[in-house]
Length: 276
Image 1 (cartoon, rainbow, N blue to C red):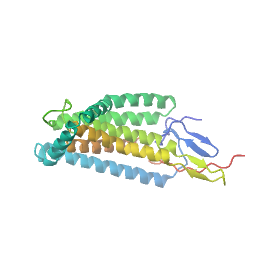
Image 2: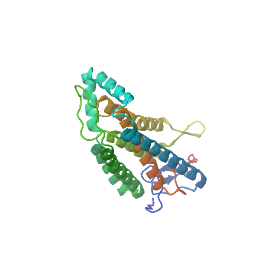
Image 3: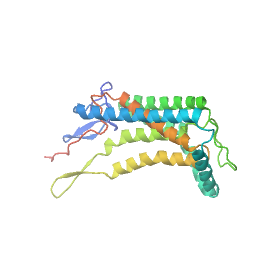
Image 4: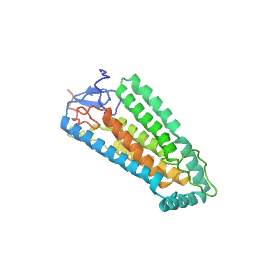
């Protein structure tokens, strides 16, 4: 096993090991055989999506801060509707409160601190640098934007949970999106294994773990956003803005920390050859 801190590309595993002619796990510090055109297309697509989402976030920010009335009708309807639904179900309110505490930004950062230490010890320093940059950029800009917009949180009768600070954008949703995206990028390639069929020696790609990981990464931010709406501490535009902002930061930093010539989020793998 070799470590290379300077030429790593974001691939999403821990240590890169080549066995029986194929890659069994991946590291942000390993270079796979070059597939320049495909990686350039992937980098361009990520950069396009990231800047598009950032543009959508800026549009929502401008509308919330200057154009829209203090509380748009859709925000008011969603806020009062979900709050009333949860208020009639005290057990659901307790569950949402616990989820809100468990998904606090400082909890997510603590989880990433542990993950960063593990990756650093395995030589995946590019991965650690990307994670740190993503969380710092999102974690610093989010409260600054809150101060700039200074949107008041929903004022609802019989509040289930009281949150401090401004409302737009949702910090919980921003951090949940970044958390889910980083975990997906780091773990997805390591689940791309092949299962050898005993009858004829052919190998097929296992997909169960990858499907579960993708579903979890997609649904986790949605659950967090619904939690914030159900507790009555954010408007719909708050969580949508937080989602757009977190995803744009994630994609743009991912491209920035992956050399365009070696970007390999999902590198091709060849099935393992027969063992002698």
